Image (cartoon, rainbow, N blue to C red; front, side, top):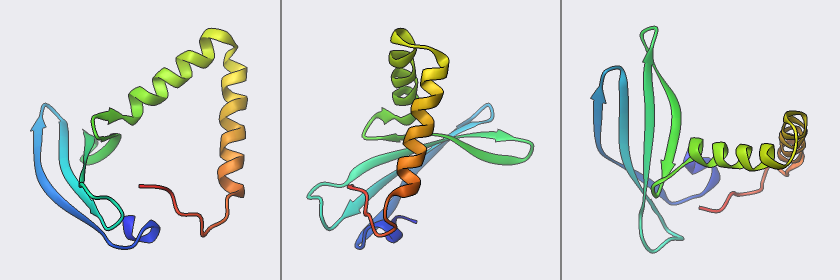
Length: 105
């Protein structure tokens, strides 16, 4: 999937930990545009016979924690409805983005 967004990406498997229906899979991502590889950990939960992804940790920054902090910050100064409106605006921006836009790695 990464190759769709940036050419010259190489992903290496670093290991996994499985315990009590939860797993973490560690990888390193090498890119031609970055001098140093970066770590990506995938957090999964075993549900109904399938492993489901619930978090991605990039260089020790959890997407779930990041979103939780952003949501709490918005909710501390405005309403739940304002949070939903902000999320809908962001989705609309993403849908309007050109297809050839390449996210920074």
